[in-house]
Amino acid sequence: MPGDPRDLMRSCQTAALGTMMDGRPYVSLVLVAFGEDGAPLLLLSRLAQHTRNLLAAPKVSLLFDGTAGLDDPLTGPRLTVLGSAIVHDDSRALDRYIARHPSAGAYAGFSDFALYRVIIERGHLVAGFGQIRWVEATELL
Image 1 (cartoon, rainbow, N blue to C red):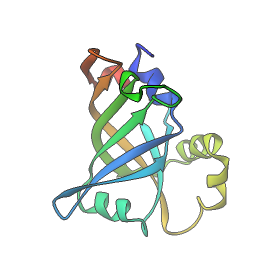
Image 2 (image 1 turned 180 degrees about the vertical axis):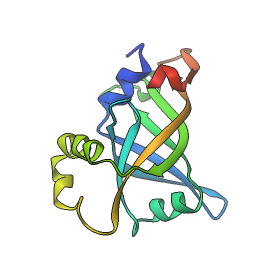
Image 3 (image 1 turned 120 degrees about the horizontal axis):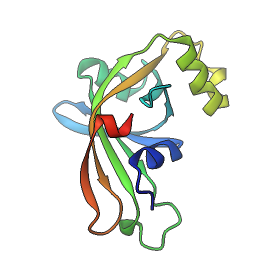
Image 4 (image 1 turned 90 degrees about the horizontal axis):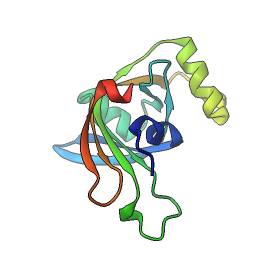
């Protein structure tokens, strides 16, 4: 289990994205990459429910799950990142995203897609049983 929450975050190709919809949490699966500073990057379509949600209320959470393959997933590492998602019009960041997820190159140029950067406020790390702590943004970036 990783002691460094950055290692856990960057080891994940996907994350569960939490947004707010009608006053309730809404969670969906997204592909994730990382900017040069370590901030999560998401390539999202305005047609998707999660994107409509975050455009109305940009506060989001991302769950990075490092429990795959464990007999008891509750003993494995996971990290919830809290922050805000903003449109990020940066061609180098988009190139980083596509390098990590080559299939995204097929739709990255569609007019309904945009790259979003998650501005991290802090995270909650569960690194295994009894190993739980809050993590500041500086430790994640």
